[in-house]
Length: 81
Image 1: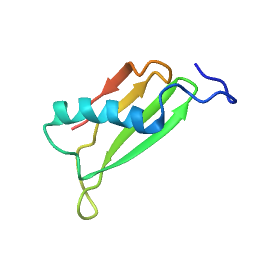
Image 2: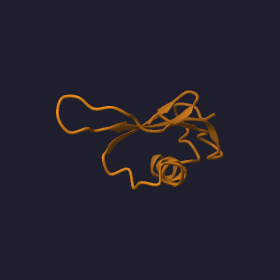
Image 3: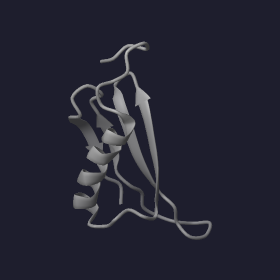
Image 4: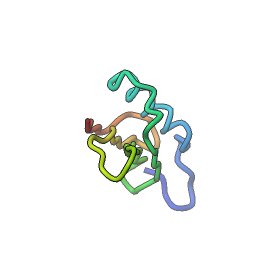
């Protein structure tokens, strides 16, 4: 993994593109109703899609990914629907 002084080999936008390509294939949806959160953790890039429902109550969720910050490999993924 990268250190605090060395930027990761995979940038934020690249991690998002990797996750998005997998998510669109799994959800068959452009995921336009999801808010996306991307953050760099010691384990790698965390990319989480959070469903923005209409009104006070909504169900479902979105995919959550952990992406290796040096290789771009998807280390884990969870689908919430």
